Image (cartoon, rainbow, N blue to C red):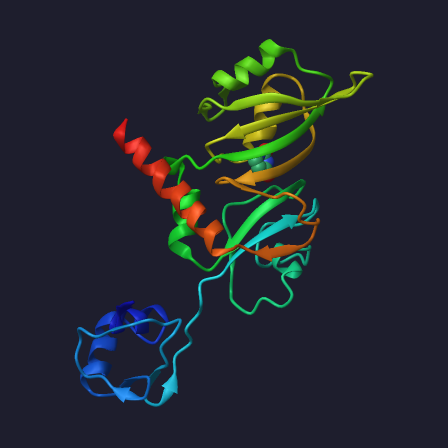
Length: 248
Ligand code: URA
């Protein structure tokens, strides 16, 4: 529940102040009743709210997990007409935005939502939300090279924070290895740059987990809605990480 003037302003009716005037002028109804007091609260997902008899656009919050294929841009449109993630969201009427981005060549778990507040928290570096990737790299890195990634390694834009790093799969003829890496930052092309720094360029990169949610067997190019429980976990991941950091 939120104050009616805030609900109206969020729905794009007008500025908060102008919305207050509309309420005082008796132009706003909630479930058919005219409301003229400013203290009244309403729930845009449940209440029928109208201004001058016209229902406001009340977007429900929606949270999606998408398995982004390689060769798709993490954007809602591309001036050059290349494939974008929203091309895959047929049947989703709400306007959702990606939470952070995956490179054109990176595949895997991408969250999309119209909940700007949660998206912002999840993306904010201060909140240290964990993201896990499977990185298939050229040749097999030595344990001490992986230790460097664990401790933090110097990149152009400074040292990386400690990461969790372990072998996931090693090719028998040693031409490549797949490493599981969890980072709590989100710098541009960070995982690729980390492996470049130890001279094992990434051949394939897939994100398999974000904020404690796992991609599991969601098919490539498909999306699904998050459950209420998953949204709760995600919110906790964002808030909890912030609190832990504050306590330091
Ligand atoms: N790190 C990368 O290098 N690329 C991504 O898409 C995500 C993380």
